[in-house]
Picture 1 (spheres, one colour):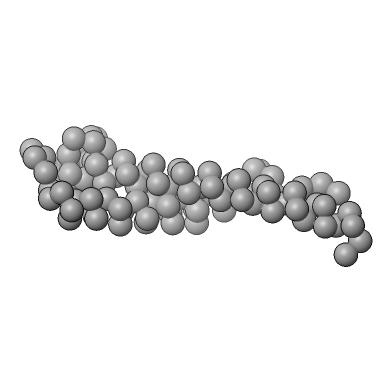
Picture 2 (spheres, one colour):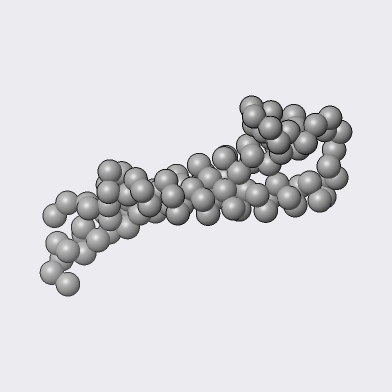
Length: 96
């Protein structure tokens, strides 16, 4: 039996639901950080063009936190689903 939960089969699951859930968690974390330490000494809120991804701006900090959390959660989900596929492979071989 083969592991059917390969990266090719899970690509869309990891890209859309997993990445967006992680980004949602990152936005909450970023908002909590901004609430705890205040808005900080940001000269610009960073909402236009490439300035939106500059981590020295308010919006850029939140955007980078969201990207990092999204990527981390997608990696966690990929690892968990790969392991789940391995367990299912073993279960299918036992005859249960």
